[in-house]
Amino acid sequence: MAVYKRTYKAYSGALTPAWSRFGVLARYGLKTLFNSRPFTAYAVLCLFPFLFGLLTIYVFHNTAALALVNLRPGQTPIIGNYWFMAFLGIEAWMSFLLTAWGAPGMISRDFANHSIQLYLSRPLSQVEYLLGKVSVLGILLSCTTWIPALILFVVQAQLQGNGWGWANLWLAGSIVVAALLGIALISLLSMALAVWVRWRIAATALMIGTFFLLPAFGGIFDLILRTHWGRLLNFSYVMMVIWSSLFRVPEQQRHIAQFDLIPLWSAWATVFVVCAICLWLLHRRLKAREVERG
Image (cartoon, rainbow, N blue to C red; front, side, top):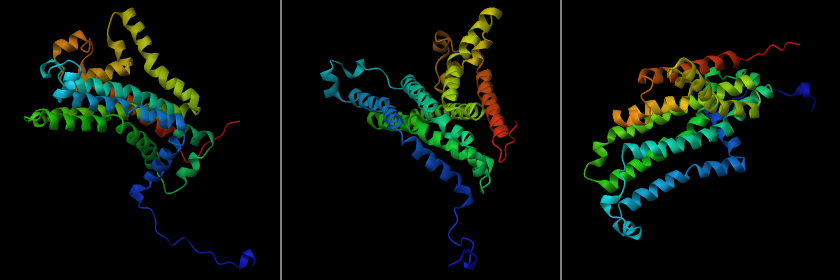
């Protein structure tokens, strides 16, 4: 049959709800990441601290297991704010490497292949596109940080008993807030760097340099001017200052760990300012059209 004799009709099937269209990007983004076997293997490796923590809590509450390691119930370390803060710190560093590995490629490919214009020409807004990409990291990092930590909190509360869970309910809130704050910072920063660099390897190197080279410049700034404000360039230190407050670390311990060299408000302000700058950079680069200059 000739083409001009065909009768074409508009699509009349079911439409994806507008509020959940960003989930399409999240679904395919996760699928693309886990198509890589090394990435999948490392993602599984990130769950090992959770399994070790689960085993530790079980052993600390089992007299037979304690007898095998020649310990008594009173000789075991206390599982509380310090323990959960250390667990979350280990998972945060492993999640950082996970983000540095997988995040730049999710968005740099769209710019390298000029497919960002195709995305935004669909009924998909700039905010929905960014939300779809960031939600991939949000889901992935949540499964390696605050979700395992909350499971350990529930297990500890059940085995400890005596109202331990209710007395330390604030600890569950601190875990969620601390983890989500770190996820927001690392996700937006990785996306912003990937958008402006457009090369996956360079974006990964720049992200690692941000967390390892910037603290060195901050240290030089402190030595020259004899101040501590240069530590604001050390995002890991800034997060630890906030975490030490969220997990109610005593002032004496914070002083020993040097987490009181900068005010708490400056640490919170640094995180919010960095996230705001990343959002502004993403807004500048995420456009439905691009001007090529020759």
